[in-house]
Structures are given as structure tokens and as C-alpha cells.
Length: 442
Image 1 (cartoon, rainbow, N blue to C red):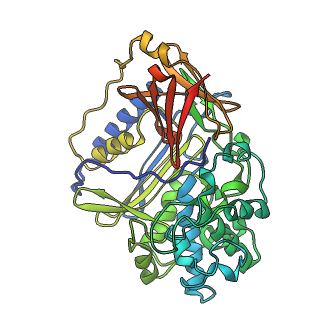
Image 2: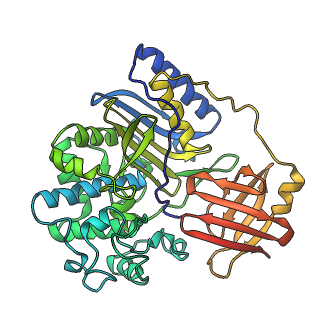
Image 3: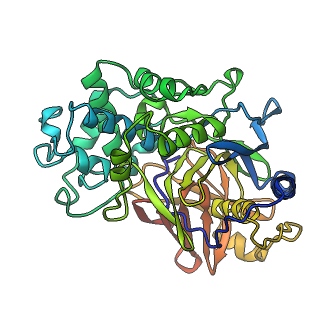
């Protein structure tokens, strides 16, 4: 599965800072999350902080389905692109210490890289470098589960011309933060894991956060899943592939502790630097972005890798933060966050009823079934029926259910996949992140 890039999150309810009766709020949050758990709509851990202190914590589902290991407050999740905040913070520490500047160009570190003399540290942080996003490449699925060294990753980045002139546009690219990881390691002659511990975890007194190991359930790690009548395990992206762009693991509470340390203190960076990081340019700041919540904004990042989905946002006006780390979802993640925030801020909200599911006529679904291929894509995609639900499976990959959207269109939200079928032509139109391909039924 692709290293899922950034998706924009728009929350569509009002924010109220009138908080009364914590027990009433927590009881309703418990009810909502229990309903999701009972209906196998989500797994994961959620942490809410208010005033820099824990307000609510709950875990649902399994850390490991096969062994029946339940998720709990200590469960560790891959946080995907939320990792970029940590990487950006450490880069800005180098800027504060004078060992880097935002105008430093990439040729100081990688002179042979495409566009190196024109790409600055600021361009990398803001996704304005023009560098191709290597996790969008069609060959990504062939190597992402195996260890990759720096030479191989640099060669993949360098195999593409700049997509635009540095600074002219913004296009999300994990390549930017892979390079920032290597720069941090070169400047300090330390591994990213050591830097993460010394530069962020130690000063903020954070434990249960790290990078650079495979998933180990015995150490408290969660596996990630897609829902196929039941939870089906995802293949695991090797940490060396995503490094500081997406390989950090943590607990929900520990991520919230990081947000509190970053936004409410000056343990990591001074106030002026943090303010600069929050200055949006073409929709993205220095390792973070904002989401609207009616008349207020939250600052933070989303993330997705394999079956993991994550959100980590701080609302300055309300002085509250929300972190949701999931290792499996079977409904739009945005709907879960709307529910949690609506309850927390005592907005009108009705707990959903999942008793009735919408399904298409079996004859229509059957017309989509088949094995599809595209000459420019290395894997075939098999479309089949899993009970009364349409499902998909790429060659050698995990299967996943497709959710009906409209007409002949289906989606798999965790991986941002959209598939539109054209039964008359025996074709399907496949979209995911930077991919937009037509597959033909064999």
C-alpha cells in the first residue's frame, strides 16, 4: 500500500468553549466510541488535552487482531506524516542555533541532486521544492516493505526532473522530508532516532516515542488493518523508506504531550520561531498546516501510512488539542473527528446508527468483477465480491473493501483510492494521490 500522503481535513461544526459537566462529556464520548467499536467502524486510541493537561483518553479495537490483543493507552502506532512536525522542529532548532538557515540550499549537502542549487531548506519544509514525490511512483509497491539505503532513495528522487521551479508552487512531496532527515543526520552525525530522543523526547519528558524499528506486538506496537468482513492486516512499510517523513511511532497521549510542549512552552523552540512555522504560504507552513473549525483554526498535521491514520491538532483559542491514532478505520475519519469534537464542545450531535447499510444490487456489483491491468502499472488489480460487498486486491497486496460513493464510483478512504467502473467498456478508472490510470478488464 502506498505511503499515504497528506489529505485535507475540513471539520464542519461549530466550536464552543463552554465546557460544563466533564462527566457528561466523557460519558457521551464513551458511548460514541463504543458504538464505533461494536460496529467495527474504527480501531485506535484518542487523546484530548485541555490547558496542557489530559482531559480524555480511550482506546478501541485491537492492537493485534490475530492474538486478540486489545488496544490500550500504551499502544504504539505509526503516526505517518504527523512525523513531519517532529522533523521540522529539529530543523528549526538548527536554524535557531545558526547551523542552518532557511535560505541554505540543497547543494551544500547533495550537490548532484536535481535542482540542488535552487532548492532551499525553506522550500523543502514548505513542499515548494518541485521535487518529485517518490512515494507516488508506480514502482513504490515493489520495494516499500524492504530496507532501503540512502543511495537508493536519492537515486529515486534524482530520476525525475523538477515538477516546477522551486518556490513557484506547493506540491506535497515526501521526498522533501526524506532529504531533511538526511540533512539532520549529516549535521549532527547522529541517527534520526538519536536526534528524536535527544532533541524532543528528553526536553519534553516524553517516553514511548521513537523511529527505526519494525512492528513488534510484544513491545506494545499495533499492526494496521483494512476491513474485509473482518480486519485484514496490512503489509508494513519499512521505516527506512519513510524516515522523518512518516516513520515515527508513538502513543496518542505522547503525541499530545509533544503538542503541548511545542505550542504551550519554549522547551523546543522560542515563540518567534513557532510563530514563523505557523505562517501559511500556499496552504502549508513549516511542517504544519491549519484546518478550519468555523471561526477558529487548529494547527497541526494529518498522517497515513499502510492502514494507520493519524490526526494531531492544537486549537490555540480553546487551548485544547486532539490526537487520534488509528490502526484501522471502516468509515470516513473526518466523521469520527466531527463526532468527538462536537461532543467535547457540547455541540448538538446524534450518535450514529449503523444497523442499516446501503448495498447495491448484486447484478450491478457482479458486472464490476474481474482482473484489471494497466501497462504502466506493475500490478494487476482483482475486483471481487466479499459477501455482498465489492472488494479489491492488487497482486501480492492485502485486500480491502470498497465503499459505494455514487453512480459507478467506489472509494477506499484510508488509502485515498477512488475507483470508477465503466462496465460497457470493461474499464475502471483508478485514482490515488498522484496516480490517475485507466485499467482494462482481462
